[in-house]
Image (tube, rainbow, N blue to C red; front, side):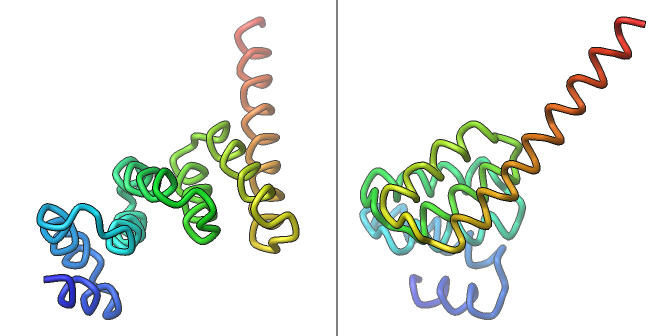
Length: 129
């Protein structure tokens, strides 16, 4: 089951990978690598809530797993949970202060936060008039 899930993921069949991976995790919930892979597959399927839940599970088991922390940051950014993304990015900087992907995500997050703030101020201005 695990091999089929991994093969499906490698073939970019993320739906099958997520389904088979979840079935495998029902049998072996302690397989952190599979939890991570299913989280990646669910992100590709734009199932951000489930992807984040699984990535948080990986983070609890292995808080210094930089790949997972970066993945989790992206998932939170994609789902609009910018505060949580910022929190996870602080953990990235604690683990690897010079991580290039972390710096790129920080820049993108700051842009997203600025856009969100502008939309909120535009909305507030429209409602005043």
